[in-house]
Length: 184
Ligand code: HEC
Image (tube, rainbow, N blue to C red; front, side, top):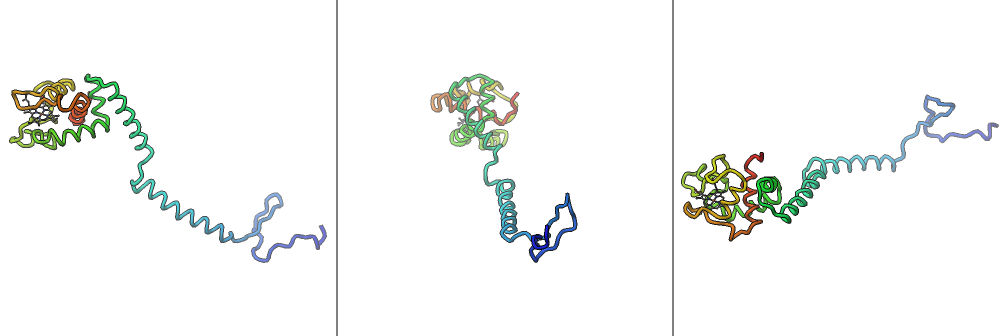
């Protein structure tokens, strides 16, 4: 290679010390557009990470999947509505059933069983018994509860809710009561 053909390096930047396989490297500043892109990416990352991972504002993917599974399960449980102990326990663990049952409970049952469900257990002047303890007047099986809510106890002042609510809403409110208990 003659001297005139020799590559003339740009003025700024020296040659870096290392040589690999005869290849040398200029020591040049990164271009501004490149640096700004990097800085903007860093700032964006902090905001993005904070919003998605820390703020709790958007629903996490796990929660979205849980909600979708609960929705499908609720649809299945109410499509082939079966009133037996395992089904009522399953309903008692389904957020949709619990939420619907709570709405019914809050409008129809609180007067006697209190918002805490603890009835006489919380306030001896309450009319209804405690629904959160393990003492059941009419049996502890989910189907026993269902039967009591559906048919009431005329002699004791527990109204019959079956005619008012129908099977599904009765099952929901029983599921809400059961959600305060440990499934076997
Ligand atoms: C007017 C008052 C009153 C209302 C309203 C009422 N209950 Fe009751 N409930 C009672 C009484 C009183 C008993 C106890 C019956 C007995 O002693 O045999 C009872 C018993 C029960 C039991 C059985 C408890 C056991 O120990 O076996 C369940 C379950 C129950 N209620 C659920 C409900 C639900 C769910 C609602 C709302 C849909 C509701 N109750 C609304 C008064 C009420």
